[in-house]
Image (cartoon, rainbow, N blue to C red; front, side, top):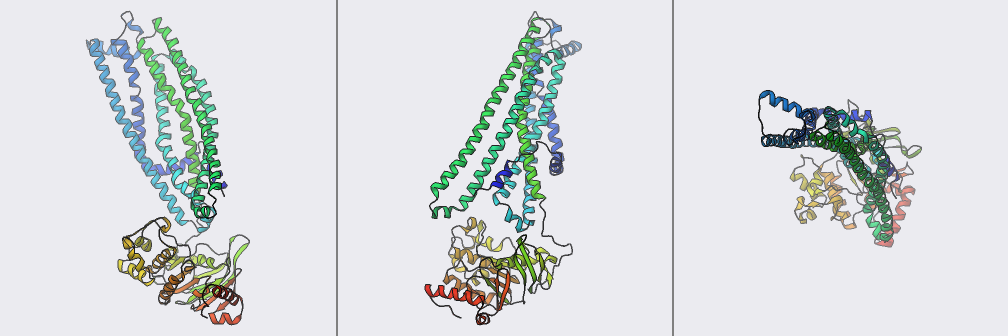
Length: 627
């Protein structure tokens, strides 16, 4: 029952950098180019400010805490330059005054660095939030435009992941990935320049450990990439398993499958734990390894630089500055592996996001679409053939018509294609052959919004959104005022139970209508359909989940409300369709019979057999239905 396809897709990492994907991501960054330029400028400023500390330390040690036996020519280049500037201007500065000035300058640079880093982080986070907003808006808009066939093939959990996890991965790229890499590169370049400026020989000695650090990083990158993929696969399996079994919890509990399901989850959870422990192992080796290699670098600087200090070639201040710069130089190099993982995850996420955004919209609306001011409600199916899967037709050469204001009932065995008629009328799918017309115009020529606003549909499995009762009836339609809301509820006998709810029409509705009975949810769905005052009304098994008493109340209301509307009533219970103007019998995707209740009984065909079967069921249960 696991979603293997979803797990496989989540495991795909692809290339760490894809120029095409980055260009497409750039289109989302372009509207905020001022923020980007500001952030880049702040990055450069913060990198320069981070170079101040070690230089200030070197100057303080060389000029104001210098050993008495140290010669002026051994001091650092920066110290020598400052010393010459003070001599040129005739400044006499004591050691205490000099140290106070250097300390004040250092403190000021730290405070300025704080504010620069604050604004840099704030700007990038704001930009990231704007980009996430734009991406999620585009993804959600695209989902609204995609045909139902797309959702038949793509699990809900995977689509939710696109809007949540994948977009978050891109946010991390913009706020902690690319920006940090740019900052690291600028800082590394600045440190390298300063080190060569201070002493090129000691600079080369400082870089002697880089090959070893590069090898360690390469090993970690390869191992961490594989472990990262494994963790994603196992997490995808956990998500898939949880979604499926939480949704199907009633089935699990009815068949007492709790112990078996728990064992299955424990096994999947254990695989995820093992994958994470393996990833932790690589991190546990890499970061201490980096510390060891950088410690070797520091030791090399102390050994080589210390020797130069003893030889009177290098000042103590320069040596201390080298040690501080070395620490700042090695750390960004060690962090590049983490940035690599962020970049790779972002590329994989962007590939999946753009794949969804590029999904073709099969249901296309012509530019000059039919948008009538009024809809009469005539419906016609003309030699319609349709298949969900190629080569497996659900409907074959189906032809019938419904006059405006007429009620046509559709009956037949399960799988006969009854609900497919409603899907094609609403143009959730496009037909393979023939034509579906409303008011004589092919539905493919209609403006899709105008077509669907002319039709209301009530399903057997009622879907209610989180919110209030009133919001579930209005669905955001502001033209439905309070009077119409109460009228629709009253006509379907829902007003009484709604007013008994705590809050009435403002009573909260939980996810999928939890807390309401099946009958109550069905009545709210009827009120929703009637409040929109459609010209065409589709009832797809709309009363099959309602008890007999509730069904009788609904039937009495429907007889008044269906009058004047074109109605397509799909039902298994023949008692709900006997008063229809005509009844159409579908069998294996073909129209077998069409007529009134009495006419079809007289033919003694498929409808007669269905009626006899239900008649026998009712005899064994309660009472004989009226003919």
